Picture: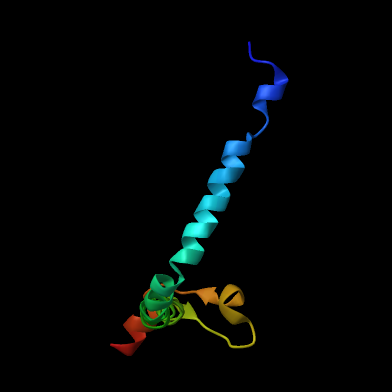
Length: 80
């Protein structure tokens, strides 16, 4: 059985974390180039999911998304 002292995080794991942070800082220009693409996908692909969810609800602005009743396809049946 290992002694309790060996179960503590070693100095090597802290060193690896600082190496990872150093690598991120060294690659900051690559992350800056990636930022517009990430923002594009967040704005145009992730945010519209709120509207898609709202299409299946009896949405009331004062109640918000969590307080509005779920009606399923009833809105589409009424529309068609």
